[in-house]
Image (cartoon, rainbow, N blue to C red; front, top):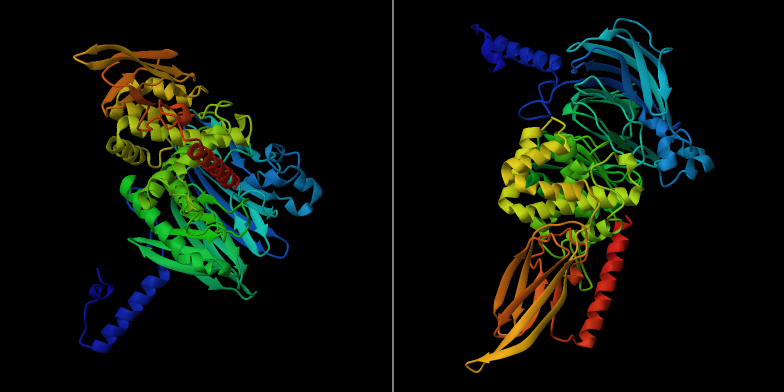
Length: 633
């Protein structure tokens, strides 16, 4: 209703107008932007919500913060202890769990600038009881014994005063020059499970994050010249007398809050349907702005149409300018990227990274699986999603690299990444239990994405779209587990896929089918027509068993199609034909993209031209070298 309609008009028009103006002014003063919601549709359960005031000390590389944390006990048991994550403590020494597992444990030992930590200066509950001396800190986990138990359904409020010493960026948080990337920075409540147990793992090098949903009201104070990008929606900006400014953000239906600050940021904005798209970029990347904004717009629209609507009204990208330690990371409604001058339009790694990080908004951000324990549900889904976006945007082949006659698709990259370590670990396990980072990436990112693509090929494209859309809509804000996804596949695709899930998610066996030999021997003549005794020998070299299609092509152009259940170690096909066999292919449509060696999937009886064969070999070597270079980023 119009505010003026609330007024009974008098006979004095000027007074009417003045009253209407005053009413509108008071309305917007007392309710400045609180009615501007960041989200659309249904809301997430509010379990852990935060009101944080933080000041960035750019000279001393510190954050000075005060936090009010409101937490609700959603379990069915009383709890007498709270657990919080103190992620910055991962960088306090070279002996922390994170640093010992990381790729650069010696940096902190050699240079103080890489050291970071959080100090809890004061902490008390809403009753006024001071817990500062009661707290127990073990590296990145803080344990708080309560004076009296918190019963199911009840809430507790904590007031925390803290200081963060920011490291030079090693992983996700810190500074580089004048750029500050602030992720996983505040004391953050661990997840309380329904049975009353705490999901409170230490910060491991391979692990990412898991948290409950809530609302974040965050006030960020920075020097006047700094430009800030953050999760959520900017509610207010005010200038302070000490040459600083305070920006007030609100983020609803999220489980984290991150931000960046840099005095040199330039801002690009674009409306994408009902979403405000923002890109904070460095001047040297000005020529890439349109390309990056186009990629982000495409991803938001594509994922929204395929998986389900993006829940929020704003999305921010920031050029982190800090290298790969913090240059490609996802947070709710916000990502960091690091555009490179090396990546021309012929090398679409910028698009790949943007598609990947935006895909996280669905699987990490809204579905919100447990990245500690089942990272494949996020990373594997994000890599699969980026591949579908790249193929939709640039075609099936060469969608990643199309340069000097070399065409590399995202599927090629995934296969190479998987082959780096296909058998050390299964995809579904705690992130810190993998042999090393190589195995973690090979299985959680690449094998998992190829698993989903193989599943798509078995189900069919339309059924896979239905599956993923239903998965997103059904489990949005619900933290699903692997078993939930498997049950949904059975519901939509049938129970006969259980062995497929078990072999590729819970076993380390590889898939490798091959055409071992082909021969056609003259047998007899019928009406002057030569008849051949033809024989094909197929082998299963890997442990994984999956039905596979076989295509036999004869010299006269006839095609014979067979299906092998793939269970035995070998399978012989014997048949009488009126023409010699020209070639045999196992899995001719490349449905089983998990097959580790497609070079042995076919065999021809025709001799290869040695020159052509040599050129092809050189091409494959160049392609392999190029992919290896890409995967090093």
